[in-house]
Image (cartoon, rainbow, N blue to C red; front, side):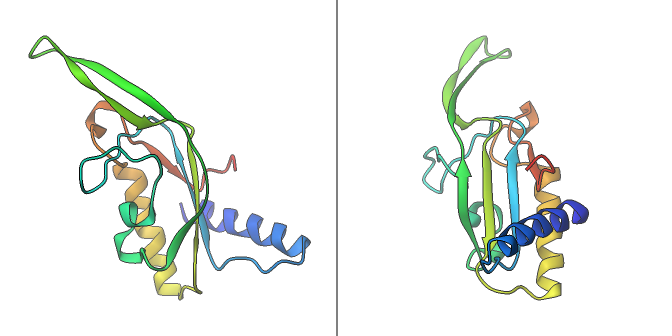
Length: 143
């Protein structure tokens, strides 16, 4: 994880440097490996990933700068009740979100960020994760 994080930031710095633009302090991407069912505090479906949803401790220091996402309808069948599950909107697999820090992070904060992102990748996001929803890849080398 730490290697992917450093690799993405190096690529971003190299790109910005080649265009004589000041690079952001730290950046990371989140790519959805499966559909994700996300809701806000009021139970409404959300169509984008906000920093407060995934990193509440760093919400003021990290901001969303780019997203490429789409929504999909998820339906299913409850085997125990022999009834259909209600349809839900989900962020589609393949959706990508790019975040950057709004200020220079200290080494301890960067280590904490990497630790939280590793946990996020292991745990996943949203509801029905036990059914395979909400899998994410942090700093996917594809990007």
